[in-house]
Every structure is written in structure tokens, then in C-alpha cells.
Length: 48
Picture 1 (cartoon, helix red, strand yellow):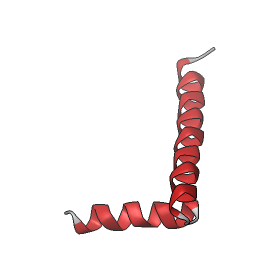
Picture 2 (cartoon, helix red, strand yellow):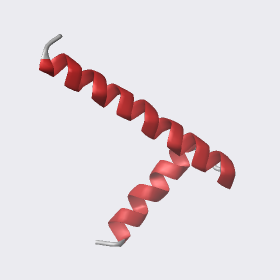
Picture 3 (cartoon, helix red, strand yellow):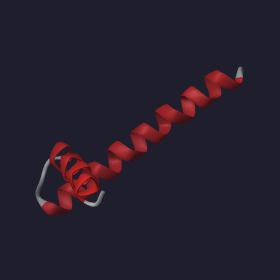
């Protein structure tokens, strides 16, 4: 297996994990994963 394929697979796995985290956190706060992501983006922009 080539290094680039291994790296790409790791990125895909990490993306899935991040999506699951957004889903879990948003569920506990009564929002959608998209809203949770937007809140993270906005809070990062405000902290700059």
C-alpha cells in the first residue's frame, strides 16, 4: 500500500470521527451538526 493511499485513508477516518463528534455534541445541545459546526466557525472568528 502506498504512503499517499494510507494518508488519504487516515484523513477519511479522521473526517468521519469529527462528523461523529459534531453529531454527538449537537444532539446533547438540541442543535443540528451543521449548527454546531457554524458555532465553532463563528467562535473561532470572534476570538481572532
